[in-house]
Each structure stands twice: as C-alpha cells, then as structure tokens.
Length: 200
Image 1 (cartoon, rainbow, N blue to C red):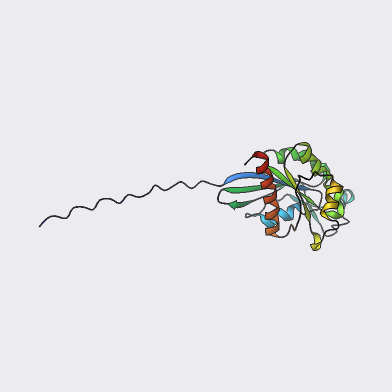
Image 2 (image 1 turned 60 degrees about the vertical axis):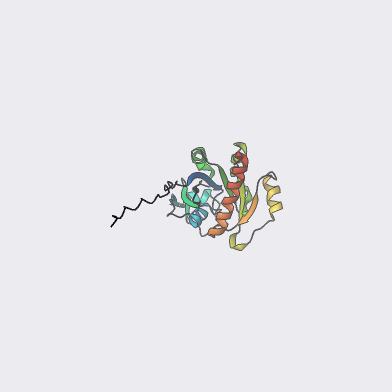
C-alpha cells in the first residue's frame, strides 16, 4: 500500500493593501447668512465642527438681518466637515465666516484648498462680492452656487452672472443648501473645475 503524499499547498494571490482615500481640501464661502453652515451640515458624514456664536445686539446692528430675521447665531471662525466621494477621494470642507470683520482669517482657511464654492443669496448679491473677488485675485478655481431660499431665486443665472461680473468659465448653478444631494452636486462641480485646471 502506497502512503498518501501530502497535498501541495494552494497558492494564494497577494492581498493588495487598501489605500485610504486621497484627502482634498475645499472651501465654502459667501456672505453673512447665505447657507454655508447649513451646506456643511447637510453633506458632512461626521458631526460638523461649527464655531457658532449668538448674535448680540451689537452684532445685529452691524450685520444685516432683514432677510434672515430668524437667524440667532453666526459663524465666528469656521465650519468643518468631510464627505467621502468614493473610495479614492475624501473632501474636507472648510466654511469661512461671512462677515468682513473676520476676513483676516481667510488666508489661513483657504491655504491648500483645491477650490471654493461661493454661495449666493440673490436677495443680497452685494454680500458675496468679497468672496468672488478673493478667489479671482488669487486665481483659485471656484463656482458660484445660488442658494434657493424657500425653493426660489430672485434673479436668473444670467442676471446673477452680470451682477457679479464673473467670467463665463466660472460655473454658476442653483442648489439647495439643505439637501445633501444638491450640496454634493455643487461640490463636484468645483472638484471637476479644479481637476481641469491641474490637468487631472
């Protein structure tokens, strides 16, 4: 009787190491009360970090609350959140404060960002001029997103583009800062623009 020979070991394919998604920084900017904190909170897969402070009587005398009478807090430093777009890419979102008196913080917040989403309230277009100028002067890719308050906008996109005097190459869209899918689509517009700029 021939003794049974031990079976040859079965070769197994090497297991590829799973790479973490590439971290990409993006800025959400705009004027006071346009929906920046709401947008970050709508899309973030983690509990967003906010630096909200109560609006005091002094601040109420400086900030225009006529179109946002129910607003009781405001961002005094930044908002932070993140969203994994796919297994290869994760967006880290930094929301800027909307008031001009906090403008000195912008350089630090924007440093290293691939692009920006400038949120606009068509009832107060002049509040977003500073954000548009900031990205234009620093040649940072950005898109303009008109926030549809109460499901409507006061002006057409053509009128908004003319009023802001932004070039045709700057994407101009309508979105709803309260809706996760709408915010995601807006961020993807900025991401695609940044990739085009870098030749990615």
